[in-house]
Image (cartoon, rainbow, N blue to C red):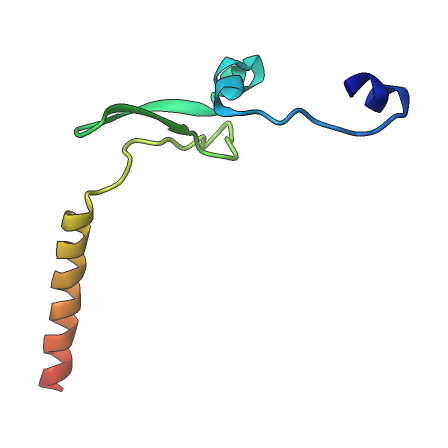
Length: 88
């Protein structure tokens, strides 16, 4: 099929699965995926920050908070707002 596309000047691109992406030299050169430590998973490979600027490249430092911890924080903030609303 590629030969036919080339022969007729058709624009196309390869469709990668994750195995292809991990092996691709361009993905590696652009550091498109990074390893991130996680207390539960050990280490996870995730997409890096896009776009990557030279002066402020950004980083992926953790996978996110645990759901329960996030909900406790949200609940505490939400509860504080409700108490303040009742005082007014």
